[in-house]
Image (cartoon, rainbow, N blue to C red; front, side, top):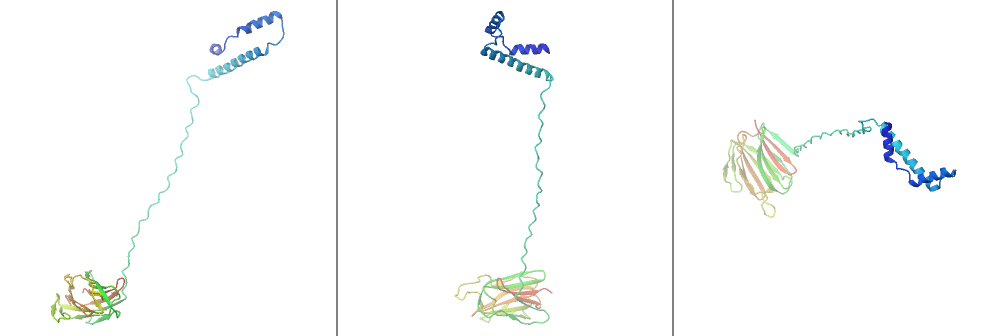
Length: 251
């Protein structure tokens, strides 16, 4: 190790300046005790300081264990953000529109009777339709205003008289129901059509066999229903839109 230090020191130092050697010899011969000039003092000091630093470096290198690097860098683990809980979406609940309650309703099954109601006034018919469920067959007349005064009358046959001609009309079925609305028409008061749909419906339901317009004269609007058996009826008035509903209940 000493040889390594000596070689390292020799490699990083330089030989003294020739003038320095000559000056030292001259001073020794003359016996002078004065300090060397300031300039040479700085040169000597610099050389000595460089040598000391080199020696320290060599010693430090020599003390470093062979075959090993410096301390390994410490790996800093990246902080993994904790997973935030994902909110489970709440399934949307479909809004169920309630069936509007009728403003009035009547039911008769034991004996034939005439149903009546409505509001005195004038309205135009905008739609006529039929439908069926497991419990009843339905006939609907829809208006552009409040349902005018009406009568719903069961009868023991499916034979009706056409208004205003008086012609006999035979509908399908064994029994019948006559519907008359006063103050209503399928045309507007100005004479333009308000309802241009069919005037004879033949759905062939188990109870309601046929529905046919009987008349539309001087704002008296009438329909006849041909049914398969004696009538068991429920008559209702609904709003939004205004409509007269006749249900033929199934026995």
